[in-house]
Image 1 (cartoon, rainbow over the protein chains, first blue to last red):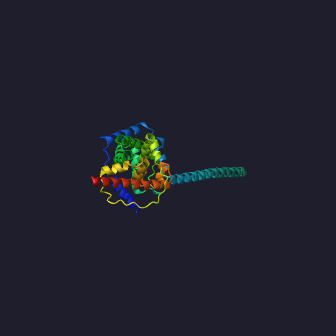
Image 2 (cartoon, helix red, strand yellow):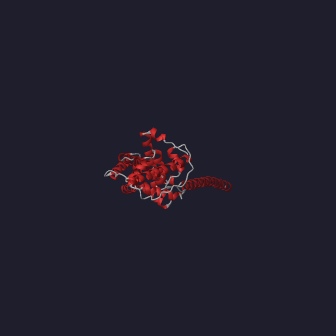
Image 3 (cartoon, rainbow over the protein chains, first blue to last red):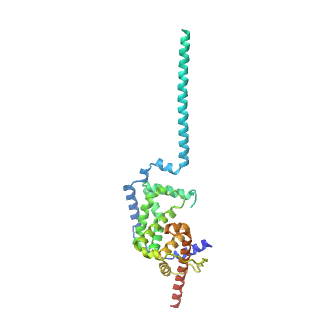
Length: 101
Length: 191
């Protein structure tokens, strides 16, 4: 019922004869738009395209951040343990060489 | 409004993004899509060509500035018409503040469905006269409701009113418009 009411009202209002806009009105808007794009602080300058994409896809960004953090933690752990192992190996070799002497 | 952008809304979002990035073809397309209906809406709200053109030009600059916040959850035209309506509202308030506030609707009437018999039979001049007989607030609310598919709550946000007052405002606006149209019709018959 309410949507019929709205449709009928629109039909009534659509009959108003709107005064034509000036000639070249669209052209003027286009020139304004171009001027704003070239003069203003461009949104693409404020946020690089990557950042614009990041704002549009926060879940993917979150996932990438978690993966990056996990990978760096694992890599750090691996480097630390491999350093320890290397030290143990050198110790063992030096002990071995000492014992053979 | 939907929670996730529809395919059409995503296309519009991409088009706006290209236009904002300076793509001339996309800019022309956005202007071609929006300028004419927006001008028509502004003209119906303000009743003057120069004012309507100024508002639409300003609205495009606002659209460009706020393009980042358009996430495609509503149609681009709905988003743009909201900017246009708000600018019209600002203009009406600044030009004739007293007149705008004078017509706040406080009386509450039981609302009934309004029948628009022969909706297409009224001539353009009498519809224009009937619309002009409404207060600015009534006219704004009615045009926002009819053309932008805004809910009473959303209109209330724009006009600074609560939902119930907007319902009353809309109802009385429709009643008044209908009464004016019927009055015009009976004058025409008498003549």
